Length: 315
Ligand code: UDP
Ligand code: MG
Image 1 (cartoon, rainbow, N blue to C red):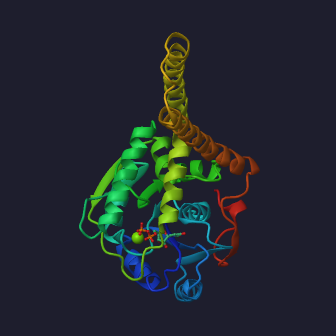
Image 2: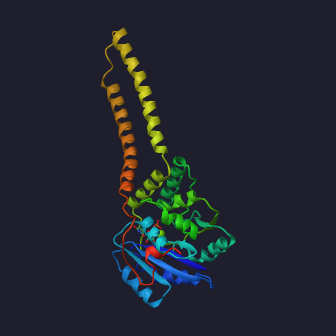
Image 3: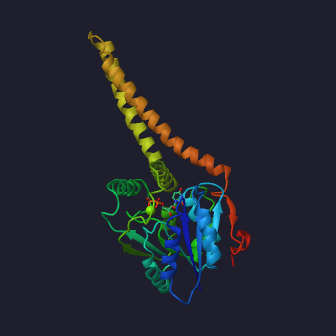
């Protein structure tokens, strides 16, 4: 039996030694093991540290991406290269405590295909992160048919066969959190208290968070499109009633036509709804466009010599 651990890293030079050490410390004996670090186009010394780690420890591997492709794509790269019977993914900053690894493995041995973790509400996380994260999951649940649990990030164990589904999926922009729920199989939840980031600052800028949220919503739900239809219907219904009223005033009364207020309000209102609907359609259309080009989700610049090339990874 072999365990693969996948760790995406973007500018994490200060954390790599510690995270490698803590993971190895928590991997039970009796398994083959590999740690695959994916350098997501870091601009700091992540790459050099990874080469050094590799030189001192044959269990450690690295995949260097050609540029920054984002956390989800980096995870995918790691999963693609992993050859273990199960694959554990966790962040490079030790917010996902490696001490859970034995628990994850124990449930896997019991027969669960996916063991995912849920972070307990905790003061360690900034107020902003907690608020935005909760709002995100509420929105996702309201909008999509997949059930998203708050606080379930990308710290999880997946069995080989789940990894194969991920490897085979053609999605250019794969939202793993949703996808892993969607695949089904036997799933088990493990709760934990998050730890503070070991060193450095978050690599998830607001922009990356918004991108993640949008890709989550659009890849798991078409409900925003229904909303567009519904809003369109309601607004045109109201506009029709208002038109009847305006005609009535014009033909059957001598009142002066109502001033610019009502005109302005309705024009603005309808204009706003139209822009919103266009925007929603644009989000989907943009993703269709990206998907239709079918570019790979990431490009690899280099891996260490110990990793099997992609074509031969499947056994
Ligand atoms: N990460 C990545 N590419 C990115 C941004 C982040 O590979 O473009 C990695 C990062 O190195 C870390 C994990 O994704 O291992 C989670 O990022 P971070 O800890 O900054 O996010 P937060 O915990 O603040 O949500
Ligand atoms: Mg973090």
